[in-house]
Image (cartoon, rainbow, N blue to C red; front, side, top):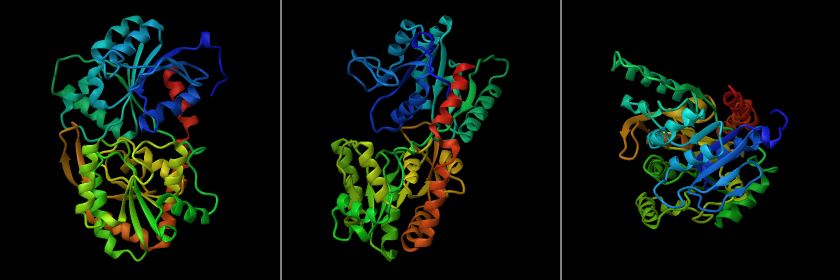
Length: 407
């Protein structure tokens, strides 16, 4: 990155995104701002943050929706951008939430403020009218090439359905996420992993056991039920002791009860650990320990915009299993164990077409990873080398963002 310029000469960026330490959205902005703060005066309106305006090392944090009525931060961000004479207003949120920002943000274009959104795409676009929600933007940045292609095709179809009408559409780009390899890296010695497993899991055979981790939130899209069922199917075929670890913090009590019922009905409850490090978000040091203690990671989401947990876990030396659809099919090709998609799924909580993965195939791959040390070592090494690539370095990705913000 270029050398730091004085604050008065820096362009001002107002960023809007979730501020919950431990959350992937939060980690993305925090990681980028570490590298961009030398060139930009960054003000982060933190969705879910209610505290005072606070000057951090790489940005100024502002509260969101303090007085109610603005849960997405659309109006607060617009007011802040106008007050600070911002050059750019930058949103990090889901594609299907863009509609909540258009009305508040469109007038800012007359003030010369650039409107930019960085969004995941969790599934295939089947109702192309949804692309109208991004037309107020100057730039729409997706997470990967597959997502960009999906949006580009949907925009083309939308225009074809409305011949003779004129539409102004945003410039389309994609930018990967990175991996903080200063924080997430393997144990220095293998023997430390046995001691770590004993410390974390407090089981008699913890040091000799293989732990399989799904660290995604428990919700409809993440489909942790598939992980549980596949593990239960695989369990009788393991030749070594193995446990499934579910790290899904900050659950509402009724949601936790629902998940416990799923675990109990699986027939494998004695080998499934729910939140062994506690029910709240944990700090990075604890998360690294959890990653290092679990030899394999699973993501069985029905649709995935990126899947940061898989990257962080792989950086700690673990093999990864990911779904063979949406972003993971592209960004993990020839590295992780990719499970074929099975059947299409439509959710009540998401407008995109998604896919379940084959539970039988997942169970078979779990058996292979647990029983075959050579296969586990090979997949672990492939995944580790993959996430160590330059394309996943935050400094390189931030340089791409600087180029975009400058042009």
